[in-house]
Length: 227
Image 1 (cartoon, rainbow, N blue to C red):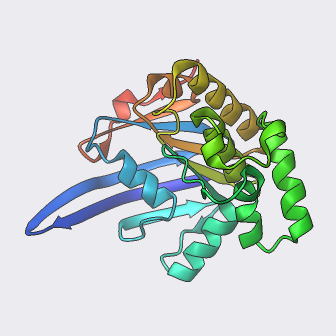
Image 2 (cartoon, rainbow, N blue to C red):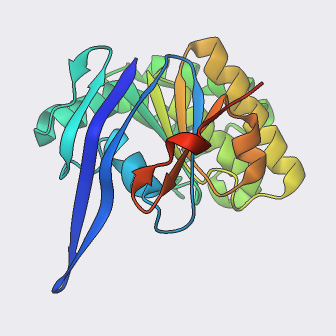
């Protein structure tokens, strides 16, 4: 479903050149939940940003359902809007919007009517257990509730892929388990692929597979599949 071949990325930091990724290759099947793991500086966030079309300055080729990723900014923005969803460690909710308005935002960008935006957003919030909080603003929600809003926002337009960057890092153990279960169950139901960059062993252990990066390269010997 998603294939990436010979992905390399070099940063220029002042006079110093840093090789963040070197010839990273792999494939991720439709509906898989895959963890990108590795120490800080291993390249996992860089690869996540490239697979999420947030960084298009790289070498190599990426295809989704046999369609090559475009490096044209307008085309990439259209693909992100239609095919991708995002979940971040810091939630990135709009503080002046209610929960349902935050969830409806991708639907607004994709041209849904106002009536459909609200209907679908509230339905997705019900799916993540927040039926009683649809009109609450982020500052009236707990961290776990905010992350559930973020998950609902990422999934409401039924994207092919959700990019998740450390989605459980700021949550306590119980809340993290709830969030992981919601991500996994809804992802499987909708058929969405999750690609998760994480340091959290709780998150990685619930994924179908882990891809370990080390010094900008994929450690093939350390790749693991869930039993």
